Length: 162
Image 1 (cartoon, one colour):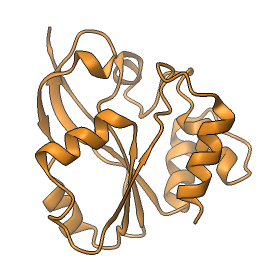
Image 2: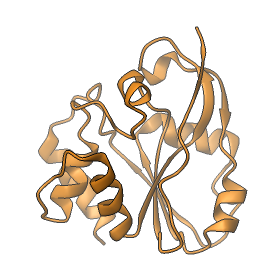
Image 3: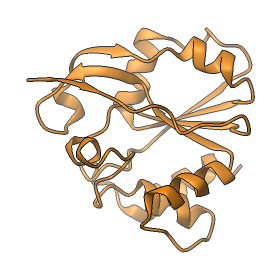
Image 4: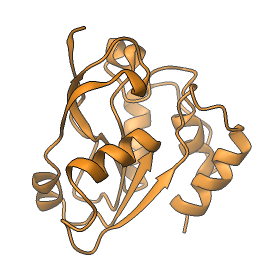
């Protein structure tokens, strides 16, 4: 097993919502793109929530999400993992959220893309450390999660488009 590292956040001063994953999978790491696995439903969900035709160009995806005041990052900064499954993550070290929230005080909502992101944040950071934040756990957009797409879309829309 080798040490894996997540990416820098997609974020700017206009960001109001932060969507946190656990750790990029093998394909995302290879491509150096958040949610780079074409079977992951993240980008499909985001574009459909805003009733917009999805782009396949990563730079356009990044611009689109920023235009919606959404930031993306991972809870885990680095870890050891064989394959892409969250259940295989070992020896995780979390990202520096106090520095992130200090640098981007406009973030008011944190959404977790799946249980591993939520549980890791809860364990290592906790929900009371930064005042005035609301937290929501979402069903993972990962292809490993077998919940029907329509159910994920409904859940994500109820949370993201409040």
